[in-house]
Image 1 (tube, one colour):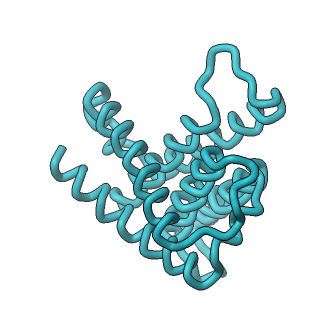
Image 2 (image 1 turned 90 degrees about the vertical axis):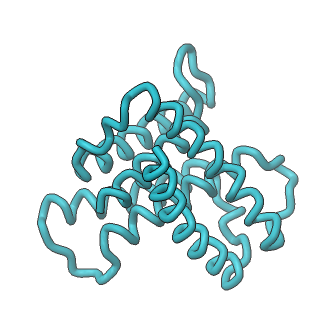
Length: 176
């Protein structure tokens, strides 16, 4: 498990570096995004990965790894947006953003550790294509929850789906 934790941290540190540099460049412009818009941004990235996987080639230079990193960062944005009150300011300082990033990633990592305990790191035998498909499925679930006005009868909420998306993308990057 130590290896997994270290690999997880390495992936997340790379994502956080990108996240914070973009926050310095653009501020927290992402604060204007609604949940469906965040879902669509993740969808675009996951769909591009799937298309590259199926075609075996790409024409835009950003590779699959960059798209998985973007998926992680948008899922963190999604979690942050769910936690902030509607009247929270659009512009946030970099220290606050960093703290919120760490808090949400820690929640995802703890979930990963718990599931690894129960599933015995089965993800290490999975394909990159499966992670992409699972991310796309989680996005469909979020869309359904949104169409149900956020209500679920038995299922986990939007936040749980974002956490799984983060972990699937981290797994894909570790295996790359």
